[in-house]
Image (cartoon, rainbow, N blue to C red):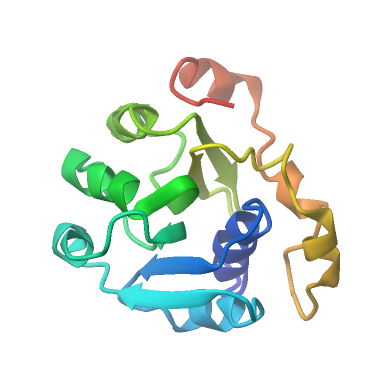
Length: 184
């Protein structure tokens, strides 16, 4: 996969969905590419924490302190997800790595745990068929896309205002596999 697709899709889908993302928490052990993309948002403050031990990384983060959390790691740990919920503001959202949509048994626990805290839980595809997962307390990634923000961003190699909503289009068999778990 082209190295620019993943960071662009993790950063810009979340940042162009949230109405006013001023505080961003990045959980990653290799956050340079994500931070490069986040630097385009001059009004946002970015805090980086490690991604290898998410529970420890999130434990001391202040409650209601982030608009957006980006988790560059796989987890379905209920305690980690509870911390994500605690850290996010009332209208916050999280985007995270996601097991392949073909691995329904790995995704069910993760999506069920997220469903306990978030109104919207939606996977989205990258060009290589891998997926990310956006969970939101209020903003819908296709209905609430901030088109002006997507149009004003420059220098992308992949992301644009058309790619954003189209990434959420899923084939029928995926919809059937995740009926009741994916919330949109």
